[in-house]
Length: 238
Ligand SMILES: Nc1ncnc2c1ncn2[C@@H]1O[C@H](COP(=O)(O)OP(=O)(O)OP(=O)(O)O)[C@@H](O)[C@H]1O
Image 1: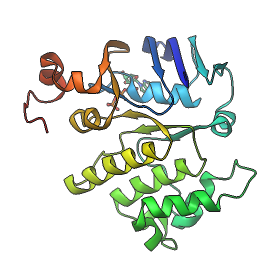
Image 2: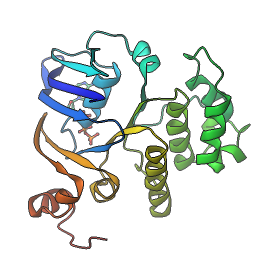
Image 3: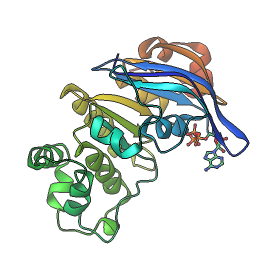
Image 4: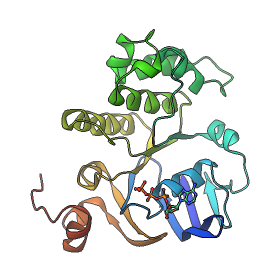
């Protein structure tokens, strides 16, 4: 087991955002978390990467309890996080933004930089362009690229398709599959449940701070209750 989240509770002040979440991610998997707005998906990722503290419960990574390990150390251990809302450095070039992702590493990141440019030719074309002048979709690519610069064992992806045009959404999901096939485990949070379930191996359904269902992604694609709640009831399965 690569990542094991056990019965975590997380609060924002008095508000309980996570009320006992447990999930596992095996090496090599794409696991997706789906659920309505406010269910706690983003909070789950933030807690795994160390951006939010736990009230109780535990998180194990490669068998080690990391519940109290600082976020920057989790990066070095192999937990990469591409957060929602992009958060790139607008006044830095694309390349500088990517290199910021590698700052915690002691070794040379040339290989990772080449890999990121290979995955996202658009970023390679725009190395010297300021991050803030990139389009929304390009900034999304930059956020994912920056997280990949840490050479993560597990990549936490928060809403990578948010705000993207349909063609770009298709590309982003293809790229996530490629990243996974090249050896990175993925924990994916998505509003776009249909596409997420199509590329994922397994999925968890979240509702108001709890997990209500877990199954192979293909099973959830055909689950009438999941289809009605999260897939618009549309039966257009590909
Ligand atoms: N900084 C914060 N302060 C107070 N409450 C917060 C904060 N961030 C999130 N919450 C609350 O925690 C709950 C879970 O939020 P979270 O962002 O994790 O949900 P989500 O499933 O990712 O939703 P979405 O799909 O809308 O992004 C929500 O009720 C939200 O209002």
